[in-house]
Structures are given as structure tokens and as C-alpha cells.
Length: 216
Ligand code: ATP
Image 1 (cartoon, protein in one colour):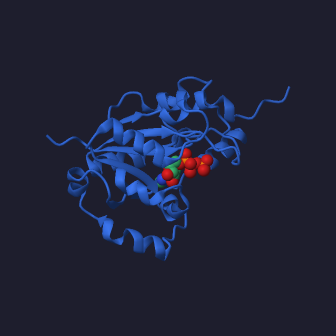
Image 2: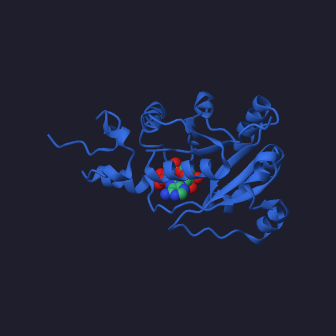
């Protein structure tokens, strides 16, 4: 019996917003896959997220309540320090045997793939699903295109029957929203209610890390 592919969608999720959820949901439908959102530790040379790892997980949990297509995987936060994607995917491969795995990447992230640690080895353990993202210029370098051309497929059935090694473009409904924009709105005292999942408004503590501290 064939198992549903397992797709991994990594990010900082500082905070999770409707762009993340909509993309993950549509990828799950297009691939008939279980999708896990996988919050990342941030490397020391990058600006730290505004919310702590625990707060980001609490927001993800609130955002995912009430549906069963999308889940969360906190394995990267449970390790000390940031993880290389290849290490995480190799661990998942050991855990899931021959189940198809799909790494979901925004087109901007995919364009920079050649700078990733052991990037060519990713194809031994996972497929890659490339997601379009509006407002972000993502030009695939010629060398990368050359390296992946033979791996490209536009047939989700191939992703379901093979274990790893393919690249598929996933055309999803564009949502021009970013966590940066949402942090700016909250810090300015605004209330971006419809850019965030409703669950984030259930508990006022969830968005507190981003709100401007009222002056005394
Ligand atoms: P920030 O503005 O803080 O950089 P972000 O909104 O880009 O955050 P991340 O947590 O960095 O969110 O993104 C995780 C993944 O989600 C990345 O692969 C990113 O390309 C993708 N992503 C984020 N927002 C969108 C969107 N609106 N449409 C499509 N993909 C998105």
C-alpha cells in the first residue's frame, strides 16, 4: 500500500500568518500529502526572532486548531542550536522508510539552494516542492536549473509513487503577506486581524511579543 507523501514546510513563523497556512494547505491538496510546519532555530549570525521558540510554537498550535490536514513538527527546536536541512531530512528518512518526503520551499529559497550545506544530497532523501511567492524576485541561477532539469516533473502522481529525487512546481494562490509586515503593523499599534489566523486572537498573550508597549 502506498503511503501519503509527508511534506515539510520550515520557517521561523514569527508569527505564523495566512500566507503560510494557505500555501501549506494548497500544497497538501495538490500533492495529497500530510504537511507539517516545522519551526526553525535561528542561527546566531541572524537577527533573533521577536518571539521565543516556545511562543512561536504556542502560536502555531493555536493556528492549527480545528483542522487535520496540517500538523506541526518541532524536532529542530528540540535540538541545541540551528540544524542543517539535510540532517533533518536524513533523520526523517530514517524514521519514515520508503514514504515519499517533500521539502516545500518558497521560490526565493529554492533559488539559493546551491549555498546550502550538502545540497545535492537532499535529492537522495526528499523531493522538493517549489512554491511561487508574489512580490519576491526569484531568479533560478542557470547552474541550478542545469542541475535539476532532469529531476523536474509536473505530475503529482510521480511524487506519490517515488520516494525522493524530483522537483515539482506548486502553483498556489498568491498572498502577498510577510511576517515582517505583520510585525510592523502590530508594533505600530494596528490590528491585522485578517492577515493572521483567528486562533491567534483567542489569547491576548499570543501576540503580546509584537505589540508596542503602551507608554506609562
Ligand atoms: P519574515 O518576513 O520574518 O522573513 P516570512 O513571512 O517570509 O517571514 P518565514 O517563516 O520566514 O516567513 O517563511 C517560511 C516559509 O514560508 C518560507 O519558505 C517562505 O518562502 C514561505 N512564505 C512566507 N510567506 C509566504 C507567502 N505569503 N507566500 C508564499 N510563501 C510564503
